[in-house]
Length: 473
Image 1 (cartoon, rainbow, N blue to C red):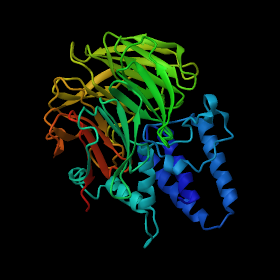
Image 2 (image 1 turned 60 degrees about the vertical axis):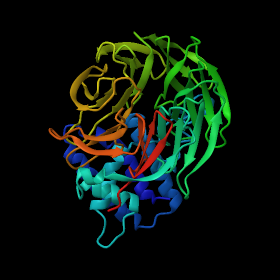
Image 3 (image 1 turned 180 degrees about the vertical axis):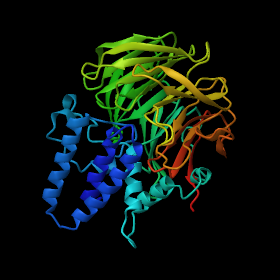
Image 4 (image 1 turned 135 degrees about the vertical axis):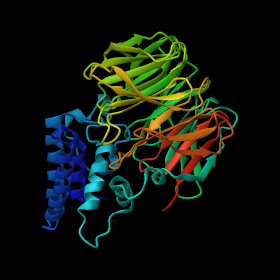
């Protein structure tokens, strides 16, 4: 378990983006100085119980000052030992844990860099922090940091049908899940060797279109062409609940509300978005809205106050999400390209130190990957740039790389119908392509990083899942 002072630093790093927002260089100095003081104070040898109490109280005070924060792929490993059980805000309906105790990897990067730069001479930094810190400090180039070349493992348990979605568990290096149009979901473990399929979740009678891990990784939600969503226990693969779509339509996508995991948003083939309470199995009152086409993609911003939904007519809608009731209010609509299905939306609160604006990454069957800037609190989008890929008909997805960069540049990764995985630097004016992975024999539909970017998983239309390993330096 990490030292308590490192856990305190993780909590501070989580809220650091809200300190002096117009002076980002001060925030870095603050975290470095905070790291130094906490490390020196740790030598005083205070009783462990007293230090844990300080950690809990500081976390609660920061939460009251800045409000609960969350980000997909949050730093759960640092915050699990923080006791928020006494805080009623930390529990949703039926006691399901909300994510108020979770920081983000974007801010953890600041912490890692502070730990690395302020370490005493001759001290040893834990491997994961050291690797991240070297990358943050710019010791290697962007191309070197994303030099994924070797195949770590190939999973072929779904070779009869396409695998539209593959996802690593949150804050986890070695747990992976993928869903298939054969109607099943596979839970895989990459370590210890050899990698294995732990269990296969069966129950849907038609293809599984999408799934999502809860932030605590204890449950998964899946949507299917059989017009149902299912709630699964990841520990034993048990189906906890089956919920029919309110419109009896094919369900095409889903996402957890990032602050309250009792709420899941689904999109269906009858053009509707629904907010569902997974504890009750009921649709939330006021939590439905109609789009212009079949709903193919969903994504929340980090605080969970904005939701974007994309349809097969080429439109992206933004919704204001009422945190107290789950009600949706339609805000803005952007026509990306009339008639070009929007197959993927990925939101990120900031891309790099040089690109501080919230951003949206969109695939839309245009033979381009599109990067948008979010310009206001209603989710209005402004095109920043595009990257060439092959996508004209398949539901290709893309992601932001999870670790934030303190050097020049920041990367995104996407599938493509040319059977390759493409890496692009969103801040590079020319020659944005950073890397291209070849190995699939069908269009690449989805990509997913593990929490420290040491492994990348990709899935294709033939059902193959490849786990790529970053080159060791």
